[in-house]
Length: 502
Image 1: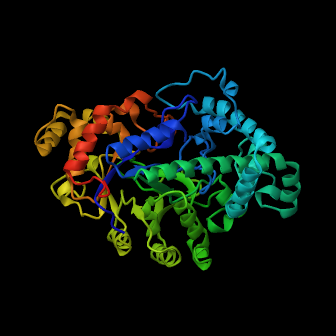
Image 2: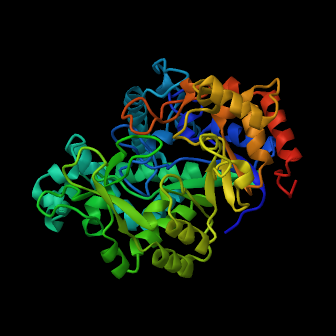
Image 3: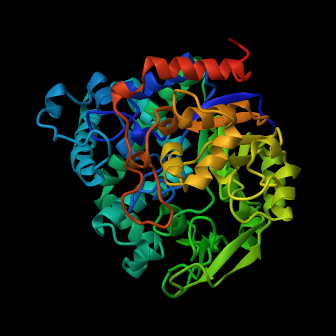
């Protein structure tokens, strides 16, 4: 569905300032919402909120529906009596500009365990009933998730397909017996989800009250070592003997990598999903819309056809395109849930069939300004080639920052871009690029916060194909400057993107 002319900022909550080494859902998140509202933005775009595993990628989570425990604010738990200020004495000195995930996990998880124990003994009857209602309403995914995380902990993080066969293949008697023995751990994982969604819902309500909508992110694939694959192996192409992915997801060689990207996720068994009326996918969309206002589908390409790589390959080169029933899926989802507020990430190898699927359901696609200057005037990422029903970005979480990108170009490329821009302002090239995106006909314009702050490559969020050092960037509290807010507000008003209710 087309969206009104508007704008917003891309920032994952892990990048917020916090005394606990990682951004969370506490005070600084509310302060960022205020920055958005005061600069007349309409959207806060985030990355997936799920619990991350090895590599800390929000696109490789232990669950498609659970929340990341590391985003829970210990200070909010303190304010509710589940922790005390004394519990924070002796906090380590965390890096101010990046997340040290190992140190964060060692610090925050014991705090969450203490909060859980206090919850059991101190909480009011009202909150006991609220917790019970949460567990009941989310049982369709929460029960499997809590079991999975409990068994994952007892196996020291080893992938589920390496567990003893009775657990790997979900023998009911074995799970029941171990579930009784490990009941305290299961309750802990449920409690953590209760607190995450309680804090997230409060933050979203505040954002909506201030006129800010949340653009969430659905990765098309889920991690192999996840509750989703363990609990529903029939939905995926797995080796029946070993439980490993028989067909792996990825993309062929592209802008980001000469050997393509081999993600390692198992691809969907679309025939079985379709026979079940796409029940798993309908639940996923419905659950997502409980917590965000708009859904960005990562790798939308995969709903028309997907790149499948056989088990044993070390790169994505030797794969093949396989057709997927995306039209049937979205028809059913529309029938069940109504017109969906979806943004299609349609970057990479895009065919007329993918465009037809996107346009059939009026999903806006994405335009990335950094991709605009490598060819002729027919380049679809040049702003004068945009359709109105699209979302324009200077860059995404997978790109370098605008400043870093520009500085790494050759002098000839820089000169060509400066000619296109016409002139440069005294505020820097990043603001010139933001201005071009805001001035475009695109209905929506989204800018990474790094570009608003004028940061270089040191602030890049992710390098596709690089396994370490990603998802770590954080900004300092003092970085949200009054002058940046006011200039962003000015551009928003000049180019007709200010919310109409203002």
